[in-house]
Length: 83
Image (tube, rainbow, N blue to C red):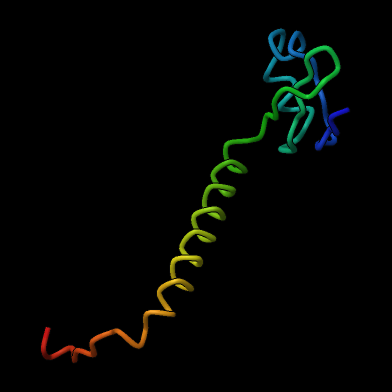
């Protein structure tokens, strides 16, 4: 059985009937969308989605920095005046 990873849930029928009411009821929290009582999707506010994308991007950039730190001994030092 798939766990439901949100405080609020709704069926696809409820979502079709009145999506705005669902969003208001959840007050910014994620909503699990159920199909035959199984989670099929999660509905999250746009702000939450954007924050998640930023966190993923930050993690990716952190990984790139850590990878490039190992190449530091190969770096060529240049002064700002030389640029």
